[in-house]
Image 1 (cartoon, rainbow, N blue to C red):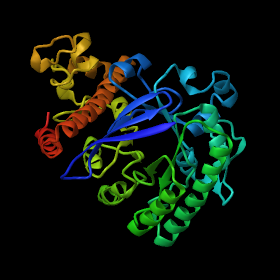
Image 2 (image 1 turned 90 degrees about the vertical axis):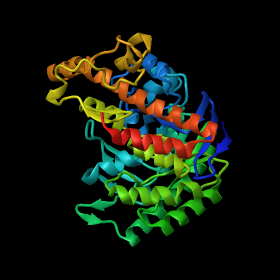
Image 3 (image 1 turned 30 degrees about the horizontal axis):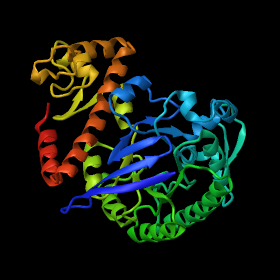
Amino acid sequence: MLTFELLATDPASHARRGRLTLNHGVVETPIFMPVGTYGTVKGVMPRSLHEMGAQIILGNTFHLWMRPGLDVVRSFGGLHRFEQWHRPILTDSGGFQVWSLGAMRKITEEGVHFASPVNGDKLFMSPEVSMQIQTVLNSDIVMQLDECTPYETSGHVTTEAEARASMEMSLRWAARSKAEFERLENPNALFGIVQGGMFEHLRQESLEALVAMDFPGYAVGGVSVGEPKDEMRRIMAHTPHRLPAHKPRYLMGVGTPEDLVEGVACGVDMFDCVMPTRNARNGTLFTRYGDLKIRNARHKTDPQPIDPSCTCYACAGASGVPWEAGGREGFSRAYVHHLDRCGEMLGPMLTTVHNLHYYLNLMREIRAALDAGGYTEFRQRFAADRARGI
């Protein structure tokens, strides 16, 4: 089941405010979806995800198929009970992970033959197999199997002819995914994925063909695959707003806070990216006033929290009162720096909580700006704050 309500639009851009209803709950859009590759968002308790306002998380079809395997997940009735997350879940198709295996896989019209990165077993992924796996996972949003068109391979930038061949095969796989999804009588929602590399006319062809198949929702794939930022922004500006207005639009694997704000202006409703969690584990923290490198020596004695304006547990403690408002229950930069230097696991736990809270709060602020009819002003204020530096 999927219903999508369009609640507000921004007259100065393609930004929109919506509400997505799925089998396991309601999602207010625009939304950022934390990535839980193996059935968990790294470094975060599910309770913390609830407290910071996560509405929907991702699971990874490929990795969950490898471990723990379908028999285990099936015995729990799907991912929700297995990982004790009872809000919506989106699973990717496995296409990106298969693509990333490089020489370990062989792509054919029928599907992808590859060696398991876990134990070396010879395996096969097809549109039909992907739909069968995702039906067992019982995710609220299922993604078609596609071929993720690379920006370049071994220094060779993908040509228009190569991008076309890849896009056209993804369209054939979309039709096969949809047919198998319907045969399985999966009660959830299947999204088609627009491909076409860095070529707008190929993106348009892919988009039109997918719309004719009448998917409940659509994603834009094949970005954040090594292309320069301006190329990604060009495709982001071209494609999302051309998708049907009455259906949700998902930009896969993107990105920085700036990407999210501009992506919303381009008509995107849904985002995911490993950046907030991965960067947190590597000591890069996102704040209202720019990015902070907690490993820098200058933070060794700094009594301030990561972000003085932030209300997350890492910055404001259980009180939720930010430093700027007189709160003193949060953890200092000096302490987080110390934890990182010592390799203590609490360090990446606190930084992950902060980064995810920042992303989810940014989306709350975006929704509030759209509700109030002030998205242009919000974008200007956001850019000025991020440029100020911390």
